[in-house]
Length: 102
Image (cartoon, rainbow, N blue to C red; front, side):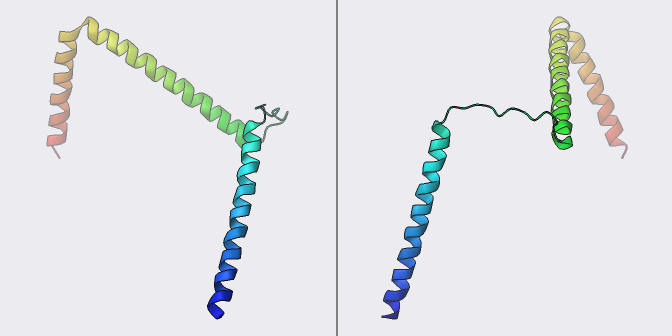
């Protein structure tokens, strides 16, 4: 008999969890089906948000500069392949000698 009481409590608990989960899922799907409108940004953004925005802008600028650098480097290597190989060889030898001294 004690087992029946424990089992019935467990079943009731599972039913409550299931109904709660179904309600949450219904609420999420209702929000997903609602038209997406961006909330109006507050006139005075919190300081952290402004700092984060500035950081994102700086990172975006850094990425753009890196892309430009690699594009120019690629063009330079394509225009002068022999010089690029010789330069890379010399840099490799220099690094090898510097690391070999340790």
